[in-house]
Length: 256
Image (cartoon, rainbow, N blue to C red):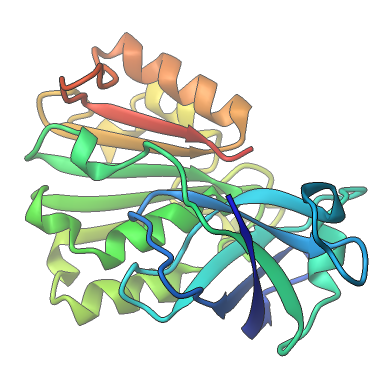
């Protein structure tokens, strides 16, 4: 494995907690929508060895055919890397592994039905890449559920809408915001509780979904507690993970 120097080409701080940025795409770098790659900074002026870098895995938000690699990142208070990332600007250098990883892929799910992508925080990144890649060639409809503490942390709605509109799939797509600690009642999402609890409470049925493996395929990406809770409630409803060559009705990726 080798590490490439890349240049930040765009960077937007959506607020003091989340940011979206893109870097130049190394020649020959390949990935599938849904995968992640390690990205980070150099700790010394002339880095040569693995220990000279501070790297973390981040899900890729861009499409494989774009000439950039994009990321949606949250600031981790007292974190080692993200405070450094939030201090960067366009033109600065970052470092990227030459290999992407991850098995949270639409191709590992049974075809048909409605694909529901459940994300917590910046685990949403991978689903932007997936939505850009015409998931309707495999599924009838696509729904993205983004869970965050407050409405101000749900900042990629327009990016999803644009990607969907460019593919002419507006009528086959829905974005659902879920807020868990929004203090302003006028800013709450369609779901105003933790998503696993909303499933248990039947909130998705109230919105018109039949949340069973007969009708739905699920993808889950986010923090470990969110992923574990989601896997449990879906398994309780009969959803199964892929095994070997056997396709599943849900796939999941821990965001860290």
